Length: 218
Image (cartoon, rainbow, N blue to C red; front, top):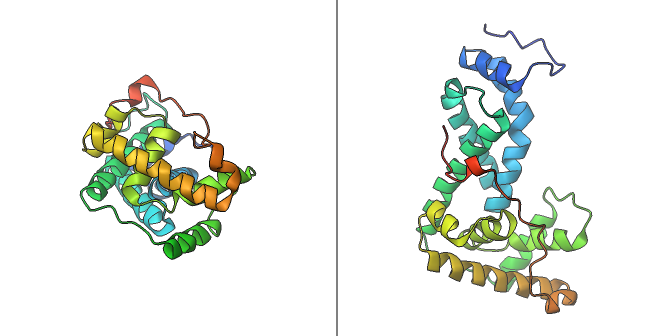
């Protein structure tokens, strides 16, 4: 089956067909899966890690994990859902390592440089408030950023985040408080209008499907 999909540029094959062909050794089928899903995985990593370089590195690691596990995909759930679980499991393992390190703090000059770098990255939203927030999130220390995104953007509860990251619930609450305080400081400095806001203006948390709350690849 090697190369069976190499000549097909119309994207007519389903993810399930591509996964089965990839499991049978068709490299072009796996390349097509990568082409279809790379961007979504990368954006998830970028939001959680705040670094384009780290996000790309972890994206490659996630697709390596996908390649190793592709034969176990049975098609009982959507391929995108299954890949999302692999991505989150890999992200959580990475974030646990981060939380074992001391959380670095940035000077004002470093924060300005990181904000400037974020402004040059993949920002496409029209809402300027959300753009400012996304840039400010990139300035947070990695552990604080992960807790903030998981709670305020992804909608996970304190105890869920604690389990994911292998830390105490009290640590989650403390880091979330510090992350929000830091973001308010950055946003107020950027836009005084934020001074009176009590809630960080992220979109409403996305609730996960019930079968996703165990964070395990089946």
